[in-house]
Structure formats: C-alpha cells, structure tokens
Amino acid sequence: MDARSTTLLIVGGGPGGYVAAIRAAQLGIATTLVEGDKLGGTCLNIGCIPSKALIHAAEQFEQACHYAQDTSRAEALRSPLGIQVESPRIDLAQTVRWKDGIVARLSGGVAALLKKNGVQVVKGWARVVDGKTVEVTGTGQDTLRIACEHLLLAPGSQAAALPALPFGGNVISSTEALAPPSLPKRLVVVGAGYIGLELGTAYRKLGAEVSVVEALERVLPAYDEELAKPVAASLRRLGVELHLGCTVLGLSAGGDAVRIRNAQGEESALPADRVLVAVGRRPRTEGWGLEGLMLDMNGRAVRIDDQCRTSMRNVWAIGDLTGEPMLAHRAMAQGEMVAELIAGGRRHFTPAAIPAVCFTDPEVVVVGRTPGEAAQAGLDCINAVFPFAANGRALTLEAGEGFVRVVARRDNHLILGWQAVGRGVSELSTAFGQSIEMGARLEDIAGTIHAHPTLGEAVQEAALRALGHALHV
Figure (cartoon, rainbow, N blue to C red):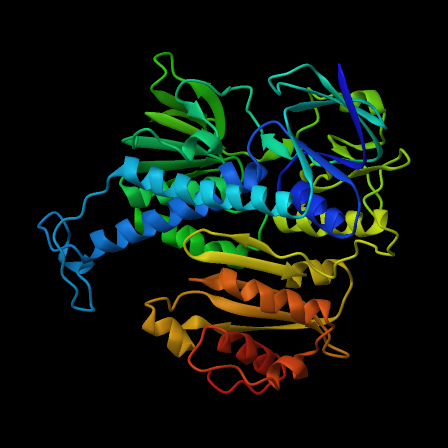
C-alpha cells in the first residue's frame, strides 16, 4: 500500500472542497484533495450549471415558438414585437453537447486552478479510516493511504428517493434529467420545489407534456406564498398540469403511469413516459466511512459549530454534509473560512443572510427575513412592494409581472430582508445580500442613485415606498 502525508486533506472536489483547497494552498498549507468523480461536484457537473444551461436553451426555443407564425399557433401567441419566424425545431443532442461543453470547460478550469496553486489532486474514492487517515481506491493503482493533520469533509449530497418510486428505468433523478437521450412526450414531475419546477418548466418549453405532483397545497411550499403565486400562474399559462395536495402511490402495473391520491382519497393515474422524482436532496453520509468517526449528528447531517468544526478535533465539515441550506455559495464561503482558520486566522461563519434563488419562470429570490418570518420573530417591521409593472426596463423586456419587496425594522429602518419575483431577478441577489451584510437602512438604498432604465430601480423604489414616498407608483 502506497502512503503519503499532507497538512490538509479534503474529501470531495465540489464547490466547497475545491475552494477550500485553493485558498489553503494560497495560504501556504500543504493540501491534498480527493475526488472520485469530476471536479466541481454536483453543482458544476449535474446541478447548478447544467440545469441553467438547459433552462436557457428551453427559454430560447420557447421564445422562437412564441414568434412562429405557423397555423398550429393561436393568433394570440403572435409576437407584439412584429418578429416572424418559421416553425422552429430543436436538436436535443446538440443542446446536450453544448451543455456538456460548458461543464467540461468549467471543470477543466477548476483543475487548472488547483494545479496552479499547488494542490495535490488524487483521483479516487476516499474511505475515512480515522480522523487522521484516509484510504483512496480506484486510482488504477494500489490503495493509497494518506495521513493528515486536518481532515475536511465535503462529500456533498445526493438526490432523495421515494420508496414508492425507486430510481431506475423511466424513474429518474435530476442527474438523468439534465442529460436526456430524447424528449419524453409525457413527463411527470414528483415534487414542486425549486428543482422539480426548474426542470419541469424547461421540459415543457422544449415541448413535453408536463404534470407536477406535490403533496402540499401549493408550488414552492418552502417559499412565501406571494412569491409562489406568479410562478404557479406561469406554469398554468405554459400548460403544466398541477396536482397539488396529492400523494404518490407508485407506478401503474404497466409502468406507463403514476398513480396518485388526492386529499379526498380519490385515486387516478397520470400517463408518463418518464418520471422525474425531485423531492429534495440528502447529505452523502454512506459508503465512505463517516460512521467510523462517531461524529455528533443533526439527523442525517453532521453537526458543526460556527467555524465548521465537528465534534472531533481537527476534523471539519462543510456544505451539504452539514444540512440546510444546501447551497453551493454557502459551501464555498465555508470552505474559504476553514482554510483561513487552519492557517491561523480568526473567522466565524455568521452571515447576515444567504441568498436563495429559484430559476423558475419567473425567477424567485429570497435574502434575509420575509414579512412572516419577521413577525414570527416578534419584530415590528414595515415592508413595501414595488411592482415590475411600473418599471420601464421590465416592460421593454416583456417582463412586467412580479415585484421587489423590502422588509425593515420600523424603529431604525434597518433592512432585514429582500424578496423578488420576476424575470432576471436572480441578478438582484448580490445587491440584496450586500445591503443586509453591510447593515444598510432604507435611507441608504433610497438615497443611492440607481441607473435608469434597469430592473434595479425597483430596489430603490421599494425602499422609497417603505419610507412613504415612492416616486413611480
């Protein structure tokens, strides 16, 4: 058995792991990163990046269909802009190749950055022996044993399965949905959270018949109801069937339909050529020796403190392994912090807010507290909404639906939260996060000159409205 040693050993090359490795190497720490699959992890390879590529392709195709003047399209769908095109078609195989090209470019970029900064990357599957030792197999050579002073666990997460619909055959997870060999005629999506709706919407725009099944009574149940309403309306306009308050019983005997039961106990079957199960993700805790460390746990997740320390000295954990929110940008921030702590820095992971974005149609952004959350916390707050229907840039983009909302303390106007729903609002998340992290007050945002015409003007107008003197509504 081959052996080597390092100061910092990182298990997992996803966003958290590779950022930690790069930062640690920049700080002069001898760093080894072990990854059994592709660098970039779920986010880069089978999550954030490929899903946004597929969503973009679907949007472009749907827009082309919207402009098409063939007789199969209703007169009402003709473009008010005067654009006329012939009936569009899509080469799905080429779309997937384009998406894969983006992923390969970014994954290669991660590899180059790791190499440039002197990180030792070991290709293979890690198994933790103890808090100071990891064995790596699958490298095409003998098992490699690596000793370390610090062990950072960043294995990520995996799609959660349903007992009634185990993965296999036509029952797929988001991983398979992002690399479709063909477009199903009828897709049933189980789960109306952000993953299910993002992919379900994309498939509908590509031409599939889509049905969404959700156990709760509305889409995006983890989000504010006012934010979810425009998304639900958009789904209905697109022709997506919503079966809310329904439980899944399993596949039909022939395997070509999904059996469901509604709140009244009535059963029915939804025809399906493919079934996407999107009921969430769970930390990847099995198959690599985690249980041998006997770490304190929070359910399925590893318990950490505000420095990402586990219950074992010099064993750290970041990202999805530590539970919600399972977001790539959270993992990146945690990874950077851990590297600086190991280098002797003084840091704590206490963000004022972590942005959450749904890339649905329209998009949804939540940063900080919603009005309901503020009220539950016993805070006396004011909130104000500015609609995109009154924003010039939104109207020129044919994107007048949705709004920006601000939540602030009544006594000192300290901003506690921002929410938005509308086209392209994901790009407002940075401004939202910065204002909360920097302790901005309504007057700070209202008094900042915002470029015209931009969607960002709605941010200023929401603050002005909260102060009682909005200018454009």
